[in-house]
Length: 295
Image (tube, rainbow, N blue to C red; front, side):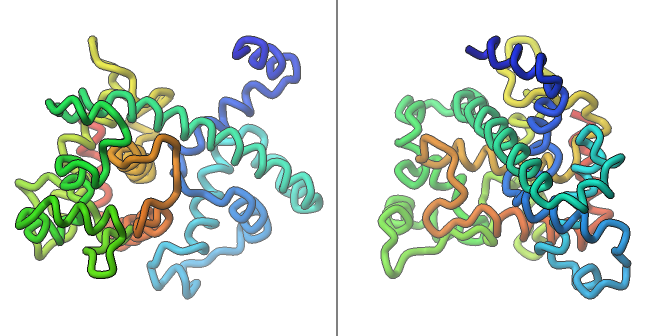
């Protein structure tokens, strides 16, 4: 079946577009409204200024998504740059193109999520075999519950892990909230983490590093978590790091299939708040991506 679909794409002359669309999640991330990005990106292309109020505010919102995601898609998607004028005159075609991107990107994201989901047990070094079953993860188990716990609430979690997990799992009125803007422990190297500095240790956890480096380097005997980072030193950006973080969070929760939200957690808010931090701390962002490229 896969080979038949491949032959159909090849005969239709759009296999290169299909492969480009599969790369989009690794370039722009897990939560992208391709219709908004494409339609507004084309309309606003060339009109942006460093004096734009949204640019100066440095809050990663729709303005930033359209401006920066479109720039990356424009560079990565074959033929797009050469056909701006034509596309601006055909809104229906833009809608169809955005739907194509969204459909293929979602399939690629699901494939990537599936790889991480299958190999997270080995990557994390867990020993409780119950964690081999996806539905036993999340806040059904204190190991994954602690990894998903906001780093700001770890002390409370450690006082009574079972009670903390039950409250989150059962959505109790007096539960501790696990939201997208209160970042989870699994993102951090806790040896570097400092309560007074939200960037200290962020994105440097061993679990996250293994989930990224396994796929990029493909060391002997290790499962391929991600592939098609054709030139890791040039393409592995903060967007890719956050994308992998989204995949790891999915692997840690109880959901069998990809879902944008999980209880009180909102995936879009998770990504937007992390990217807000990065655009406000460019030097830190550059050092972080350089650190990843060494592994």
